[in-house]
Amino acid sequence: MGAILRLCLLSVLFASLSGAANAESRPRRILSLNMCADQLLIALADPSQILALTQFARDRGMSAEAERADHFAISRGTSEDVLALEPDLIISGPFHAIGPQVKKRNYRIINLNPAENYPAIVTQIRQVAAAVGHPERGEVMIGRMDAELKGLRRIKGAPIAAYYQRRGYLTGTGTLVDDLMQRVGLRNLATVMDRPVLSRMSVEEMVVARPDYLIVETDSDRVADQGMEMLNHPALAGIPRLRLPQAWTVCGGPAYVRAAKSLSEQLRAHR
Image (cartoon, rainbow, N blue to C red; front, top):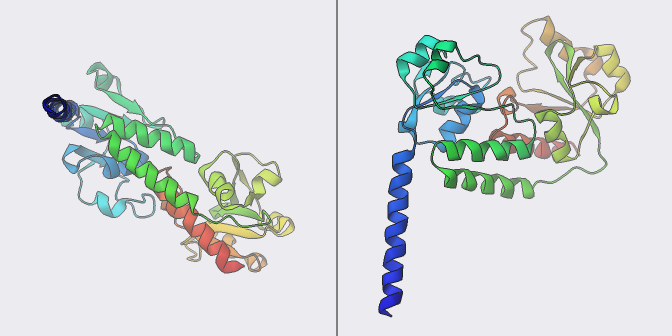
């Protein structure tokens, strides 16, 4: 019994020491230069670890975590800002150029590519969770997302849907929206018509193609310019619409589940 007790005490001590070591090695000044990284940092890091987010972090139309971002500092992401802030971890992306002055400092930098499907989202969650020193939070998040997606109902019959944006842009295969369509049982009109990742489609072409659904952004009913006006052309009025906030599809992240559940619920409501 004494040996077992000693082993238990040693295990507790080892776990305690490991936790302390992990806490010491965690970055304390994390700077985001990537809007999608903003959202993952808010979800996975301690607030005290986040040095600053991007200037888009508080944009309600672009970021799914905009409200929570109000509590964090914002950086323009310039080389001058980075040097002044002195981060110990920078999370950037393919569309942000790291200046030579910053590169000379040998900061730890992680680059996130766009996550265009659910497996890529899971990989990025693990990557960021490990980088900020909280891998367990990543696993909890993934487990919760997996469980919610597992209970999702797929529509039968594989109806065709078109993700139609202002100025007539059509979203094609290999995109996050396309992955969402497949998740809920829809076929992408762009795939059916062998269109590229992004193409333009006139109102007349859309009328001829006649998909079962149009997927549009939630604010598409508000006609602010000619680009938005075409989405409200009378010729398209007979095609049922599914609506998603743009902020849920700009980045691959936790909002993926919200978008998938919303599409599934709207499809059930139309049947």
